[in-house]
Length: 380
Ligand code: FAD
Image 1 (tube, rainbow, N blue to C red):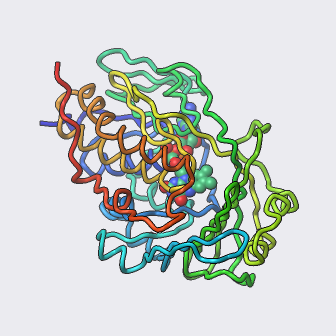
Image 2: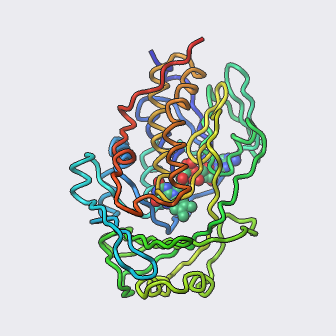
Image 3: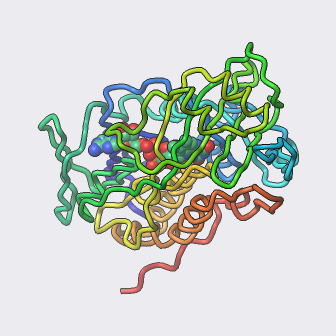
């Protein structure tokens, strides 16, 4: 049972989901090639939360210890009021999370995570400067066409090409992601800059229309990272981010408590990002083409689950390829196995309510992609 290991699998997009999925498939003995539009990956300064549902998988990939060494194990997720700094609630993390879920809650530099994932691949797995422009499912294989005029064939293709997915567009037509009405300023605060925040914890300051979340990304250097989210009518820029203007950010956070204002004042490398989203998709893929990660379920970042969902997708995709004899059946079963969870996470992310008040996070953290039941096989 299972798809033959000689079946060639192409992944379009070598971001967090594509790289993780390539590593999982390769480690299971599959033949994988990744086609990435970028010429090279720049080390990105932003931070990322890795909750136990995803650190468990990263442990299986073999990069869990390296991430623990490079990142930070926060003591708690503490929710505070943006104007008064008073505590709303605090979820203990650290050892309690490890004991309950068997995997840690980590914060780490996004570039570090990406580097570790790419490092888990065999050399030459990723072909850079390959921007997919179109693809044809020819029934027995898929041909991909790239912007440089080259083509490549594979038995099947996984579109892990992110929010503006070309694979999705070729299959389902052009449909731009919707601007959510929120923008996010992202910045780092160097370790030597004194700010009155508890650097051991993740802290989120809440107001009805604004929020700030801050956390360390590296326990050795003490670097601190924050995201400050505010409302905006439009995103008028063609780029997916622009340099941030500190005065504009400070104006958007007028009335915040002193702790938050000190943090915002200390910002370095400030950038401004639009938050986009799409409604849940009914049909993720077709035939020998499947979608994964932001290509099929982009979400606002308020649960810190976008990359986690892409990486969970990779595990379920692998398990379905192992459980089925035909690619089409495996891809159908994979999408059906994932839709409910990713739609729920998209909905809660859109509310921006996650951990605002005391709640049990087990439905997110306790999900084990390696053992969760697969959807029933497709009936002919
Ligand atoms: P991406 O990582 O975007 O990768 C897509 C890749 O495809 C890119 O490398 C791109 O160059 C490539 N590509 C695109 N088009 C083509 C093409 N035509 N041909 C070839 N290659 C192509 N998630 C978390 O889990 N935790 C967090 O704490 C977190 N914080 C976030 C904070 C903010 C402010 C934002 C905006 C997002 C955050 N996320 C977080 C979400 C997370 O970054 C994304 O959900 C995740 O990167 C999705 O992975 P992906 O592989 O689907 O897409």
